Length: 118
Length: 118
Length: 118
Length: 118
Image (tube, rainbow over all chains, first blue to last red; front, side):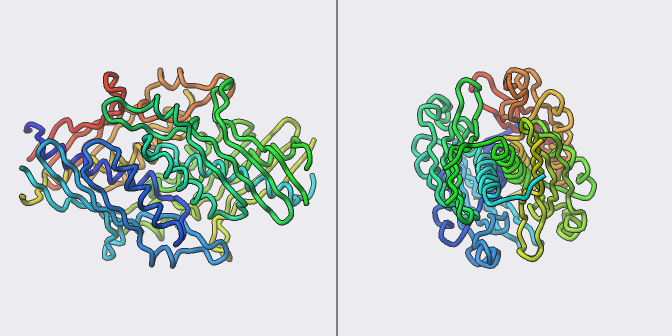
C-alpha cells in the first residue's frame, strides 16, 4: 500500500471524464447534419468538469451513415462511434487518455496514452 | 374500447419526445457559457425524431446560476431547468406539448397544450 | 382546435413513460445473469411515475446473447432489446402502449395498442 | 514522460467505472420502496465491466425522503444521493475508489482511497 500521488489523481480524473461522457451522451438521436454540433456540445460539457486541460470529440460519420434508419433518417449515438482524446492537468501532471473503437475486440476501448510529470 | 385515431397518435408522439429528451439530457454538465449551445443541441437532436414539426428548448439561466458549484463553476442540467415547447404533426393533426417547471407542485410538468385537427 | 380531454391525457402519459424509460436505461451494462433483475428495476422505477397502472418489461435474451462481448462477457442494453407493455389510468381512461422492436423497419417502435374509456 | 504502468491502469479503470455509473443512473425515478433494489441493480451492472473486483452502492435514504415529491411520492436519483465504493483489480494492483457527497464543497466527489501493488 502506498500514498496516492498526483499522477494517480490525474489518471483517475481522465477515467472519470471518459466514463461520464460515454454514459451521458450514448443514445442521443443523431444524423449527418447534427454530428458536428453534437461533437462540440460534448466537448464543451466535458470541458466544464474539474482538471480538464483539453478534450476533442469526433464521431465516426461512416458508422453514423450506415446506422441511419432508412425510413426516419437518423440513428442513435453509440459508444463505438465515439473517438475522444482528452488531457487532464492535475497540479503538475498531465494525463492523456483516449476512447476509441477497437475493431479486434469489437469494443469502445478507453486507454491512457501518455503521462507527463513536470 | 375504441379505435386508435390520428389524434391519439399525435398526442402519444408528443409524450414520447418529452420523456426521451428529459432522460437523455438531464445530468449533462452545464454553465452559463454552454447553455445556449446545449439548447440548440437538444432541439436539433429531438427534431430528428419522427413526426416532429418544431421544438424549442430554453434552459432557466437563473436556476443554472444558482446551482453553479462555487469551486468548479458548473452544475448539471436538471429537469426543473428545462422549458420545452414542441409541436407534432401526425398526418393532419398537430399536437402541441410543453415541459415546464411547476413551482406549486415542485415538479417538471409535461402537458398537452393544444390539438388541431385539420 | 379542440379541448384537451381525458383520453388525450392518458395517451400523452403513455408516451412520456416509454420515452423516459428508453433514454434512462439504454446503455446500461447487461449480461444474461443480470437481465432478470434489470427488467424488475426498470418496471419498478417507471411504476413510480404518475398515472401508471401497470408496466411489464422484457429484454430479448437472444439479442443480449448475440451482443455479449466475447472477451468481457457483457453488452449494453439497446433499445431494440426492449419489449415494454404499459397501461396508464388517467381518471376513467385506460391507455395501453407498447415498445417493441419492429424488424421490418429495424426500429424500436412505440405504439398505442388500446384505449378504454370507462 | 513515462511508461504507463499497472498502477496507472488500475486507477484509470476505477475512474471510468465511477463516471459511467453516475451518468448512467442519475435521473432514475426512485422511492424508499425501490431504493434497495436499485442499489443492487447498479452494483450488478457495474460489476460486469472489466477489472471490477467489487462494488458497493448505497443511496442516502434521508436525502431521498426529503426529495420525495409530496404529490407523486417519488423523486429522481441525484449524484449527491450516491455513495459508491469500488475496487479494481488490474493484474497485481488493487485500486479502491469512492464516490461520496462532500458537504463542504456541495459536490459528489470521486476519490481514490487506496492502492495496493502486490
